[in-house]
Length: 128
Image 1 (spheres, rainbow, N blue to C red):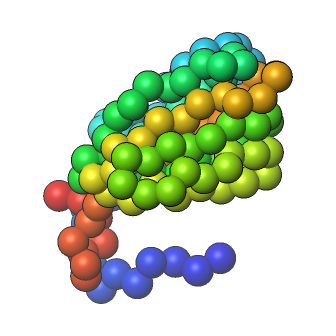
Image 2: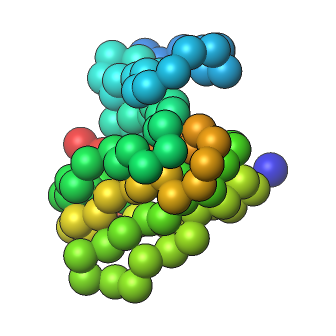
């Protein structure tokens, strides 16, 4: 697996430890990684939307977001981009500063993971 090219390792990065977090059980929204102190800046969660339910319009701000669709069918709506189909086995990318929403358009629960990471200045290894 490729690794990021970094000329110096921050002593701060050694403060973080590998984690294992189960996520399969439960309904609704569940935060899995909260950022500091568990990670340098990444957040992650599991969402289960009932048919017709939406996550709620929000913005990524200065973060990138990835959605990994585990089960079901939905739509990823953007304010400034065309909508994307959200189906099992799809990975969807949400750019920084994007107002968006996820809606379950199917007849069964829509289950997905979201991963959010701060935008890092080009050439830097870690967020400040």
